[in-house]
Length: 231
Image: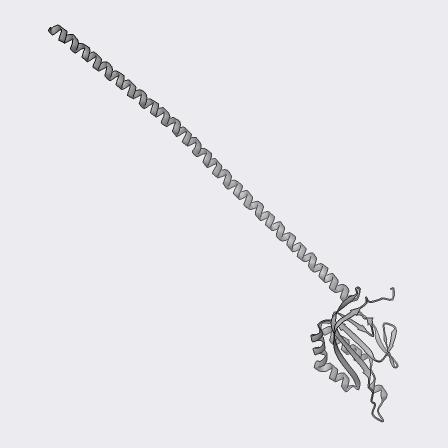
């Protein structure tokens, strides 16, 4: 009986040890499996982290390159705008220069100044003192230029910066063309400014010289181009 119990105890011990070994082996296998899974996950995370870092670096480089390109484009746009502004200004300056020298037809508001020999000559006075002279015409033209006149004509003839005006007896010669009184001087420019400037003191001065003067504002004056001797 005791021998049977001894066998049972021995078998139980063997089963217990075997079960322990199996249980330990299983747990160890599970742990190794988990370690392997964790290692794989860590490798994946590390790989993803590296990819993210590379992408971030690439994005920064692309952003820097884009900023440089934008600055380059902006610079070119500014240069182009400056060139267009300069070109536009040059065109306007050229138009103004052509208008000043009389190479183009012009139209605009302005004034009309009429200089007329005096209708009354006191008895015993010199009639030559009561007629329009070259200096009267020049004084009006000079005042108009100073006041900003853009174009001037005498009796419809456009004049330039070097126009020759001279008295020849009862007539006045303008670049070789002779005109009797009255002399009508037209000027294109700000009509208010031109009229005010003429009436400030010049009109009274010419009137005191025995010449009749009339200044009128005009809303539309048209002048043909200045014609040189060469045509």
